[in-house]
Length: 305
Image 1 (cartoon, rainbow, N blue to C red):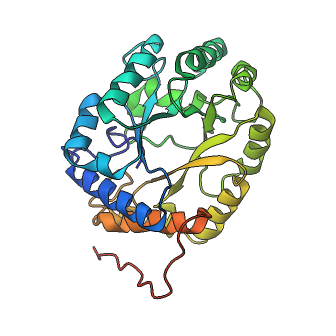
Image 2: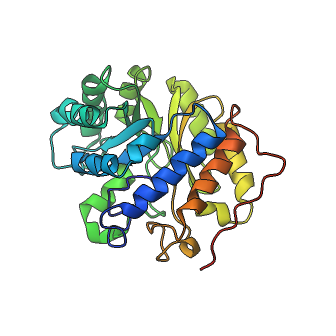
């Protein structure tokens, strides 16, 4: 799940101590390891960067079932710390977790000015290069104005909500911002994070831009909720086939309304095994070195609400 310690992505009222999340993470870690012997399992990216959450996950045994801890940071837009604190924030989690720590989302919006984002790309690369194995800049595209940002409170968040629409190196219409050329200079040390919506019209153009920029590492996602749409596998296949040339960090997220304790995408699932099963099926389908499904496999039967 994406940003499990963020109330916009995980319902903390339903799971105030993250016990349900820990159960889900352990079940998923085991399921992935059962179908793939060496694929890195990443505890998906925490935001805010909170040592107490990592201590909680360690105490509940979650870190025994992951190989990497991921963090997200947006000090010029959403976080209450300065950009020059990045090395300290990273080192705190590295020391506590005792595992590799990846930065799977870092970004600066052009909400105030394009020049701010341009400077932010350069300064982020200077601060993080060499300190972490993976850096994923968020994002390639601005979020289209006609779409909604994936947060629970939307416009009630004020300017924090509207910054979601200005995080791209490219504007909604595909024209470059000043930061694009600066990012290209650092594409050997920074990859991208780009979410693709269901049947996203930007997919093929995004691939062309990433080739042009020299990007090798991409983080994106497959939605468990989307898997219940008509023709879901056709879209998943198209997306993953288009991205096959990149080294992809794949995030599984979004609870289907009918499979959650509450009917929204941030809810803990009714049964964590359902989510774990979805992840294992996607690994089998899209990772070439995953173990094939046994001939006598009995499909997981989800609990009924």
